[in-house]
Length: 205
View (cartoon, rainbow, N blue to C red):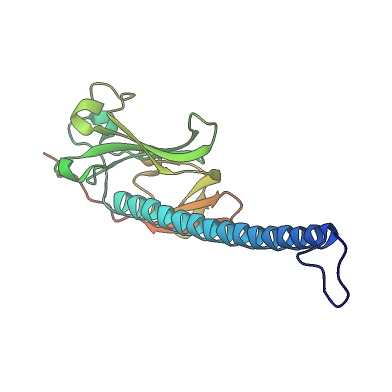
């Protein structure tokens, strides 16, 4: 039907509709990308906060366990003076258990660098109560991961102002004065914990 003079066409032309749809699609894409970037930023913030919390917990465990280190076991001649430190692991006795409800007694700890099932680097602890360790020095009662996503860990040992890569308490005549833990998680910068050791002597009978 022909338009009468003075009347305008109703609705939109096909070209106008296509332009409108293109603009709506472009605006939707921009909104989606902005939301996606915001979610990624929130996720990175949450991951950083979780890593920081994990570091604090792991550091707290290490500090409390080493600070309460025992010089050895009076019942075992070979372990009356006991502490073996290497670059990738430490073996020592402590009064601090991994599980709070197990308070009471002395525990053998082995702190070591390893890998989980996914092949990710971890800092782990293996614990055995001292009475059971005397029967089976390689036995493990509790194994717990202190830190995940570990890219590097190294232990150092200090005494009288000197730093050592290894420490044998029997050969060196006692426990070190401190342990330094140098580690890095993921892509973070390496950090160091300097943990002084306050040795609890086992009464000799």
